[in-house]
Image 1 (tube, rainbow, N blue to C red):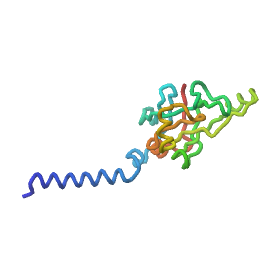
Image 2 (image 1 turned 30 degrees about the horizontal axis):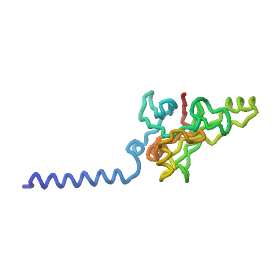
Image 3 (image 1 turned 135 degrees about the vertical axis):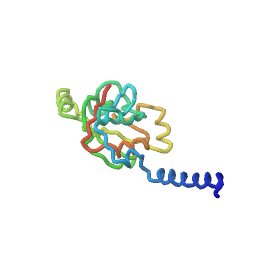
Image 4 (image 1 turned 120 degrees about the vertical axis):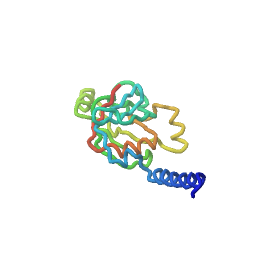
Length: 175
């Protein structure tokens, strides 16, 4: 007859192997499930990015940094503001400096029109990305407004969002 202690040891080892293999895969259970978000909502004031599906928040992530001048809508290239409004994810790719990059469709036609009336460039290359990692990334976590308009997430969070969001996913950036 197997003693309780032997059973407990065997069960503990089995549980440890299962947990370690899940961690080693590098993907969250949500990503492995094949789930995809219907849309993204960003609350700049609260510094939260939420993934939505079927009218419900599926998961929320803290935003580490916004544009260096985070209040208000991006008006032109170089103003260091994060845009506000309705856009979509128009590209996803690896990033040497920021882990992953999910490009937002800024500027849209209205942004371009407004920039043209002010005789300025609207800018572009705004997206969701990870932090710089290492010492630079550590320091920047204490300065929540250092980007040129992008939204910065923890590297582990941007990895997960990258797997849960498809090109074409709508994003609504609120003040």
